[in-house]
Image (cartoon, rainbow, N blue to C red; front, side):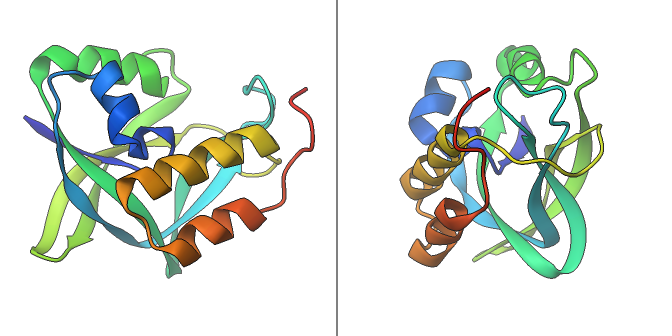
Length: 150
């Protein structure tokens, strides 16, 4: 099993159960020293795409999943790693039980650009469903965004 730290739409346990049915939610935690941002606006269908970048003053809420070998290829496809859009990185996640190493995905494009309002709503709902604190989801909903998809 590979421990995967999801920070975007895969925060949603329901969506992950559909995408990777053999990979259960293990818990939640924080990527301390990382910041949620957006980039690759020219690669997204409706604006910039989510990613995380190192930032010593920030932290990002994540859901941790035990990814079964049967789901690894599907997750790589879903995250765009198969196509070179995202790349896998090793991160440390702070949990209530201590730090754990995990794999996550970062966008292989320049930071900048705005996501769509619709996509920010998806992220906020996914974070809520994973148990993110209210202030975290409120901050997601207040982020600058494009008012329309394209």
